[in-house]
Image (tube, rainbow, N blue to C red; front, side):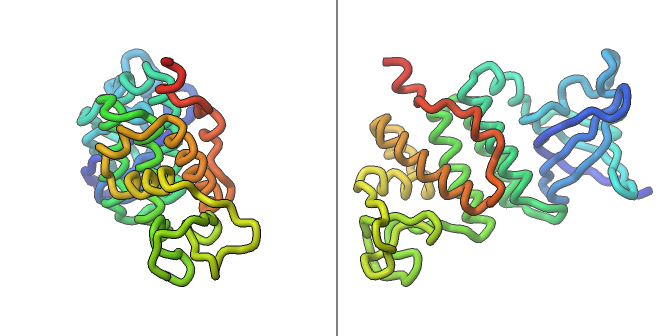
Length: 248
């Protein structure tokens, strides 16, 4: 059977038989791949902890009829243990990998791979608040999937903004003519923060007030849940209070 090499992020794993695991990966060249890691649950396994969620590995696999098989795995990014040591980072990473799992299929999706890789690396280095890293990742991932939100011009008629009404079901902010009756208004600070999260303007994001960050996170969550239809189970484990507020 054909053997191939690729690098991938471990999205999730589950047990198979007494000693094996099925590993779901998002790879650089082959998109989403499901593969068996044989004997990984034995203490003598040659894979060690290299195939745990959030880890990045250089892999050798051979193709199977329904599942591929991992024959080699060398660590490229040991993010799992670092992320798991911090609750906010762990829950944010869990939402990220579940989102990547839902948005990608078994075809080449290099931009989604690179986006997830960068977000997990940032979490492991504690570069920004975990919730903000997550929200930026989610907005960008949905944009790559074809659901780019608008936080300036009207998302329905493209009338130049900025606008003060937001309707997540319509793709972001909307002008007065397009806004349904009773649509909620969005304050300037939250609207600007959402735009900065999407654009990766981290100096603005990091300087934002905790209350503004919380409001932005609520809108990002609503936007993601709407587009992914069945929602994300891992969202239930996110802390409702930002770390910045808990430390006060």
